[in-house]
Image 1: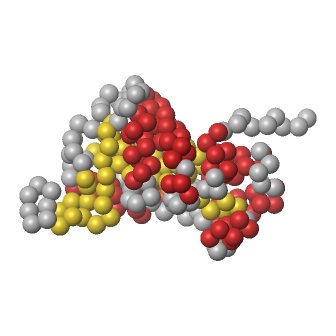
Image 2 (image 1 turned 60 degrees about the vertical axis):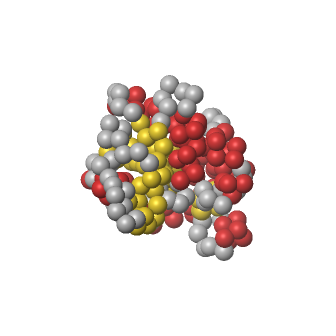
Image 3 (image 1 turned 180 degrees about the vertical axis):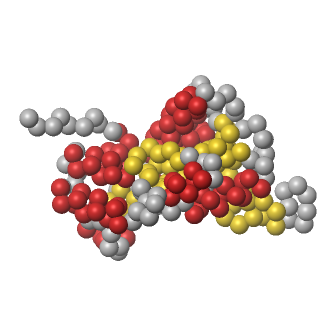
Length: 223
């Protein structure tokens, strides 16, 4: 008996249609890279604001389910890791405003601002420092975790409670273990393996392309 087709995922379908997730020869054609899978939630995403809106709504819904599961009653805030996730996090906050879980927004700089003095004289964070809030770091992908470790360290300097990390795609390299040791569990919309299998099941890629991409994922794992 043949397997039933997977349940349609409008967000994954849209990411494919707009060329934000590429496989095989398309990666070489678009970016000149020799890798079987490439995820780019930067350049082309900004040409499709309706897709950025859709992505923000999906991340907010995921965050809402996490907060409900944890039975948290604290105010929630999202902060994107610069630069890629800054507009993604802003979209999450904007999409949240007419829901039962509105979230606050904050922003980070790649380098701390250097002012002569004052409370914000040397900080990578732009926003209100409210210790009552639970902060969720937003990013496009989870790989080694290095940028997340940096962001957590910088935000904690300002007394912010970084509770968790939420990414669009976990590349399944093992960086989530590093974050867990810092007390920040990592959540995602998609694991990269399930994403690959979805595109194979919906016949957007063939079995050979899917196999090559899955093999590539395994070679990048370190934890």
